[in-house]
Image (cartoon, rainbow, N blue to C red):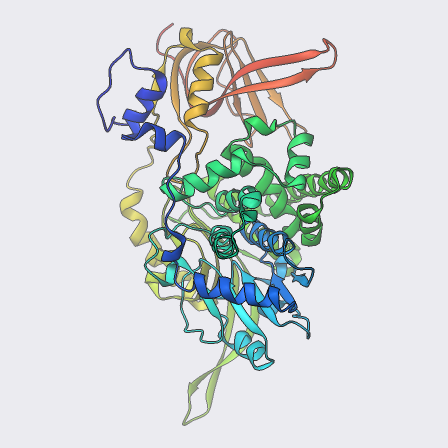
Amino acid sequence: MKQPKQDYLSFDSTIDKLLSIRGISNKKEWLEPTFSHDKWLLDNVHDAALMIIKAMEKQSNITVSYDIDTDGICAGTEMVRYLRNYTDKVNFIYHQRDQGHGIAQQQVPDDTNLLIIVDSSTNEVDECKRLSENNIEIIILDHHPKTLDNPYALIVNPQLDNYPNKQLSGSGVVYKTIETIDELMSQDFCEEYQDLCGIGICGDIMSMDVPENRNLVYNALKNINNPGIQAILKIKWIRLDQVCTQDILFNISPIINACARLGCIEKIIELLLEDNLDNCKELAKACIKLNEQRKKTEAKLFNSIKDRIDDSNKIIILKTTVDDNIDKGFNGLLAMKIAERYGKCCLVIKKGVVVEEELSEECGLTKNVTTYSGSGRSINDIAFRELLEQTGLCNSLNGHSGAFGVEIDEDNIPLLIDALNKRLETLDNDETVTVIYDIEIDKDDINEKLIKDINYFNYISGKDAEVVKVLIKNLPVLERKVMGSELNSIKLVSSRVDMLKFRVNEMYGSDINDGDLVDVIGSMNINVWWHNGFKKFITNLQVFIDDYRLSSDK
């Protein structure tokens, strides 16, 4: 159990106990956040706003460049929709995910006067120089770290200044910018796009412990205005007044990303820019279908490579080949699946080009160098990208601490494994896995109100503000069921609450017999579904299992 950071009394409410356990002193601000930093603290935001206003007043041709993930797609849609309130001289461009990030992958229209790049390109100096030499003004609204000076664009990026929130995503930077335009223009259009801002922040796994992020996400959840997002939620049977961050993380963001991963980014952009509700319904169905296709492809790819996974080191590096037929967009998904399955940081990399490297300028000696590139995924908040950076063995690393792109020379891969084995040794001294929970719940106290209170606390959850984990002891198992088309979901039916585990082998929980008592750690949920036979809604209380053990009490 987590050591409570503040003392609490046994008769305190469930929410007050959880606040004390997490060490949260300002109850109202945590649960219903209002805090936001002054937008003027962002360097260049005023100049960027004025440049955009000038372009709109002159009826200049404005082009918005989308990036290829949830944050970039939401950020681009925010900007396009916002600008359309003022001008019809708005165009947008995009590319497919397998081409990588950045404006260099896109064709900027020749008649563009102002190019607004969102969620990328802080370091794309050469491409920005080329575009600026063609008399195109460039604004970059980004949040990725700077590695190169880029004098050819006006950049708004909290990583480049003293803005207090370094966890603001690209969609958050866009929101701060359009908020600035609103103030200068005495308008309030930006509030219509709070939902896209919050979805982008959640989708990019920004910290939910940061007050400003909590505020932006809270406002997003309370104001789901985008017709395309509304259509997805309706098809998924998620009520607008009950949307929480977990719905974004497990329903909205995967659908957005799936369209990009499967080379159909235009589908999700079309949906998010559509206003006609009937059209949104059909587009949403198509995007959801792509996500189902993504799941099947991911499972098929994992099954095709799982026998080649070597988990004898502290990290897992899977080298794929052309014969594996793994699209670039699936490298990250495979790395994440492997990391989750084996509990180790993972790289999924593919052989790239073989280049000649000069050994001696005087003698003209060269050697062939083979590079590998792909994606990395972390576990347990390990700053995996930073660990790789410290070794000095990678050619490039782009992205976040736990999810990033990587390129490395083949000769450096064994050296990298050795280096990380040493660095990670202190984090993995034994094979004992400890599962931490927040609070113990008596099985006799489980009811709808208890779970609703916990879910109210979980309303804004994610990185650094994880969903509440509970321990429940001595739950009787009435039946064990293996479910799903791939037989990868397990349900343990009990008298008060059903226990569920997803994406596991069908043998999970096979040591449990009907009538056994189990202790379980997991997160709680209320599942409401329509029963066609009974013609009514059915309510089930659930625990999503993190771990279990047979109870010592019989």
